[in-house]
Length: 308
Image (cartoon, rainbow, N blue to C red):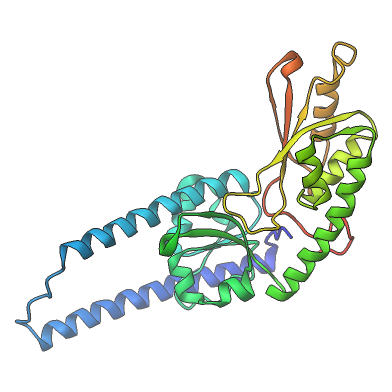
């Protein structure tokens, strides 16, 4: 579920940021003291030579990590709803701020900062994987909505599991079953036209609940011709819903000249969690309406039992 920080949560985040900042100062002071101690104990010991191959490898790894952070930051800024708290290490948080993501929606996790459970998403970087270990992927955030790069430099955007990994996966499975049922009903809806690939996505429960509800509601008033579903996020975990649909915006021209305006008026009148980003491309018979919901996909909208 999308988790918007309330006043107690904001206070918790403020305390966490203070702890993170203090931890960074302690680490810096310890590093300085250690450097001073070594200098006093061994004033004439030369630094060990660094092999050229190692330097090149380290440089390439650092460059790859920086690239992946920038890619993740751009994706989060474009795809994640503002108001969703994103947990990240201080460097990743700084990258997100530079990309335009609101600082008020960030939860910096420094050394010893604890868990990311006050957030809706957590950005898995080398620093956080080192700090949280296997708990990050097994307990705190078992599913990936987008991933960038490979190996140690991978930056993955994960959905936080507020009640633990097992509870989240159980809720995700229940949501999948509900999405399958709703999708199969849409395939049979005479007012909805879907290509074969879209039928597979609907019947398989691959489509976001918000899209399913939006399409079904829209189809009560006007015909809906689906062109395709997309956007589960790059290298997302299997089972992450598709959050974008493109529909024909020129059905029945010239008899339904105001079709696109009718659809747009309906979409723009919706409120959260059914308020989508809408774009219109093309003109005349080539008009397309693109409906996109922000990440992460909420669970329980179809079952009536969203997780806490």
